[in-house]
Length: 291
View 1 (tube, rainbow, N blue to C red):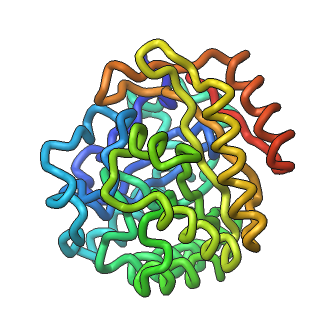
View 2: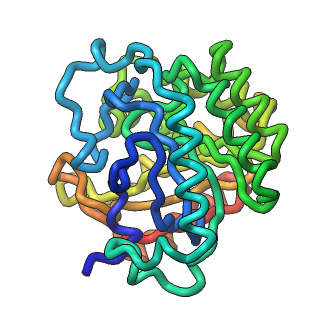
């Protein structure tokens, strides 16, 4: 049986929008909200999980996602919360191996098959999550946006993030390199790297933000000292411009990526990178291993 943290399909039984996962970063049940049913994204990351492998070019994928059924979203979310809090979830074959300490509901997370802020109903979905969190008296459940950082200054995103962070929510925003070349290698995007940096500066001045950064072995090569120096310089640039980050989440490949050239770093390597990045940026680092 595959351990639950290594299997994160964005569907669950007959549900199409809401899906539970056992999250390494949440250390518990994270209820995913997939508002990207047709996989719209402004990135084409080389490490993207294989079931999200992009089949269209970037121009086709970087448009707004189609509308979703908000009432269906509400029904699916209520059902999934009930399953998680009652323990029925762990009777499902996919979740039977969940460790006892991970059998808790931690968050509602915008994630899924694309960039969630491309959803035209992003602010409305945030309102539904806030409403259900209050209705079910779940103040401990966080609201989390996992984003690739490409739309953080757009009006729709700002409205949704303002509402989400008003409920003790967090933004987990991607930064996968410190130069244009490193960024393009990892994320394969049409969005300029300078836009990513400015978006992160803006967002981190306005909301609680954690950086999330993928570290991996690419065609057998781990990140070298040049990569680390440029990455840390980019983080310091944002900080010097008034940004602030709660922490840096460093993670490596844990599930089958679309591109076989990407393989995970071992635990010792991850720890060493985390120590170096913490020293060079003066920020706390959180490490998430391949297993």
